[in-house]
Image (cartoon, rainbow, N blue to C red; front, side, top):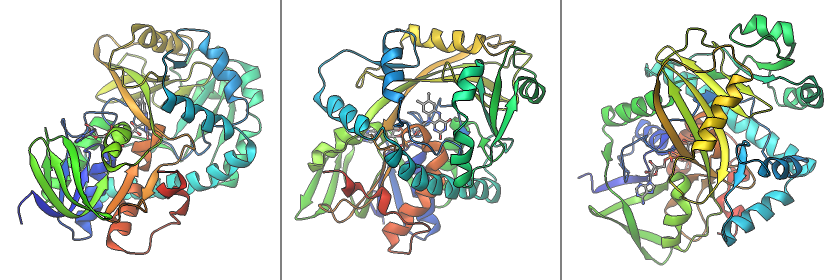
Amino acid sequence: MTAKSSDVLVLGGGVIGLACALYLLRAGRSVTVIEMGKVGAAASHGNCGTITPSHCMPLAVPGVITQALRWMMKPDAPFRIAPRLDFGLLEWLISFAHRCNWDDAKRVTAVKSQLLGLSRTLLEDLIRTEKLDCEFQTIGTMNVFRDAKSLEKSAWLPALVREHGIEIQTLDGAQTCAREPALKDTIAGAHFYPGDAHLRPNRYAAELARLVREKGGHIRESTKVTGFRVDADRIETIETDQGTFTARDIVFALGSWSPLVGKQLDLRIPIQPGKGYSLTYTRPSIAPVIPMTFKERAVCVTAWSSGYRLGSTMEFAGYDASLNRTRLDALRRGAAEFLREPEGPAVTEEWFGWRPMTYDDLPLLGRPSRVKNLVMATGHGMLGVTMSAATGQLVSQIVCGEAASLDVKPFDPNRFAL
Ligand SMILES: Cc1cc2nc3c(=O)[nH]c(=O)nc-3n(C[C@H](O)[C@H](O)[C@H](O)COP(=O)(O)OP(=O)(O)OC[C@H]3O[C@@H](n4cnc5c(N)ncnc54)[C@H](O)[C@@H]3O)c2cc1C
C-alpha cells in the first residue's frame, strides 16, 4: 500500500488532524495526512497553549453583544470586525446573536464541559504514556481582574462551572498576588482553576507528528487539496497539487480553511476565521508561573522554561494575512496593566493565527449526511489544543464504527444546514 492510498486520509495537519491520525493509527488503520504547508504551522503553532476545561462557557452569553459593540469603538480593543461586505460573516453574526441567551449558553456549557473534561484526561494520558516532550504542566490557570466591580460581576460563575465538575477558587487581591508574585499589587482578585494545564503548542504539534510517523503514518507536507471526485454520496478520489489520493474514509480537519475546501463538496460550513495574535519573547526575569488571562483586557500570558508569550484578541477580518501592529501593541499594553515585568528581553516571534469559529462554539464531529465516507473534525474555535485528544479518540471511534466515549450528537455537523 503506497502513501497515495490508505485506509484513512486526514486532510489538514494541525493539532486536530494529527491527533485524529494518531488515534486512528492506534486503532490499527493505515493513515496519510495531507498538509498544504508544514504540519502544526497554522493556528496550532503560536497559540497560548493552555488546556482549559474551565473555559466551558460559550462565547455567546447575554451581555456579550453590548460589550462587543463598546469594544468596536476602540481600534485596540480585544474584539474587532473589519468593515467589509461579507454576507457569510453577517449570517454568522446573526446566528451568534440569537444564541446570546441563558438557555443556549447553559446547554452548550453542559456538552462542551464533557468534551473538554474527556480531552483533559486523554491529553495527560497521551503525553505521559507516549512521553511527548512539550513542556506539559498541571498547575492550573487563573483569570485575573484589576477592577473589583468586574470581579463582583462574575460572582455567578463559580456555581455554574462547579455544576459541571470544574474546580474553581475565588481569590482576593492579596491571595492572588501571593499565588502569583509576577502580578502588580493593584490586582482586585482572580478565579483560580487548579484542574487546568498548559504546554508549548508548537512542541506538542511536533511531537504528535513524530508519533504519527513512528507508528507508520505518512505525512505529506506541501500538498494542497484542490478538489474531489464524488460518485453518488462517496468521495472516490482526492485531488491535490501533488497528484490524486484515494482512501476508504476521509477526515476533514482543515480548521479555518474548512469553508473554502468544503465548497468543493458543496458543503456550506459555517466557520469564520477568528484572528488572534501572539508575541513570544525570551523569558523576563520576573516571569509568571501560572498561565493567566487578564479579564478586562482579554490578554493571555503563558511562560514556559523555553520562552514567554502574550496572546489573544479576536478579529473578524476574513482571510486577511497581515500583522496588525495596533493589535500587537494592545497585547503589550494590556499585559503592562497587570504584570510587574510584562515583556521579555527579546521578541522571538510576532504571530497571528485563525481560530476556526462556529457560532454555537461547538466543533463539528461526525459524518455529514450527504457524503458517507467523510468525517468532519473542525470548528474547534478558541480551544482546539485542549479538545485535540478527545477529538482524535472520537473521530477514530466514528471511523471505526465503535461506540463513542461520549454522546457525539451535540457535535453532529448536520445541526447546520450544510
Ligand atoms: C492567539 C490564539 C490563542 C489560542 N490559545 C489557545 C489555547 O490557549 N488553548 C487552546 O486549546 N486553543 C487555543 N487557540 C485555538 C487553537 O489554536 C485552535 O483551535 C487549533 O489550533 C485549531 O487546530 P486545527 O488543527 O483545527 O487548525 P490548524 O492548526 O489551523 O490546522 C489546519 C491545517 O489545515 C491546512 N490546510 C488548509 N487548507 C488546506 C488544503 N487545501 N490542503 C491541505 N491542507 C490545508 C492548514 O495549512 C493547517 O495546517 C488559540 C488560537 C489563537 C489564534
